[in-house]
Image 1 (cartoon, rainbow, N blue to C red):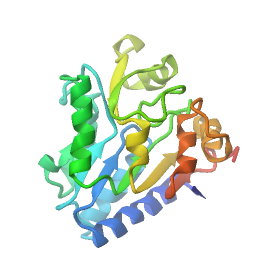
Image 2: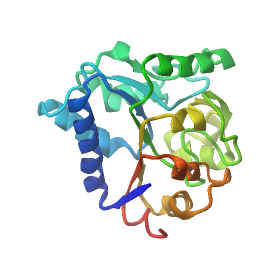
Image 3: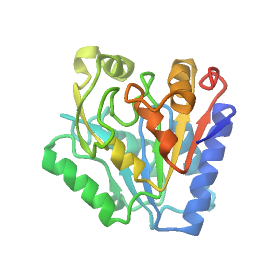
Image 4: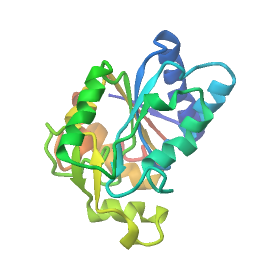
Length: 239
């Protein structure tokens, strides 16, 4: 695991350069993407590079980590809406090549189909992750199994509290999500983790130098052969 510590803006540029290299070398790359405020600087930089002609998504495919159960794709807080608004509508990707789990018609069978679709696409070349204050990646909460595939996850109180700023009240925050599992994530060929701000410091320290323990789901990334963590000074303060 490689840790790169710099400003948020510099981290976004460095992470975007990884996408630029990958897409220039493999235009039909399969990208695993994430949502939330953390990747927004990266997505803005990818849009800039795309508009400048420095990279193209025209042949790429994307698979998002997760989606809230119960939200339509056009709901302003759905992750499909987020990805369209923050990235897909502004670059040259084919919308039919973008995939976000279905939050409305959510069953165990649908979850398994998502893993099968990723495998049929050739597997994820580069998986983007954020990290929750409790160490979750995707919606894989502390204490969950290491061998999980895409599944319906119950959201912890801390995760719902962290996300309530996007909703009118805590009562509006969904209690479940469909999420790639730990094993799904670990099968990606390369992984990038973004972590910004002091609220992520303890989780980053546990991920990078703590024991590999289900109490911090992100700690399993220590066992992956190609992980790069981009963090600002506040998030890396305890490493």
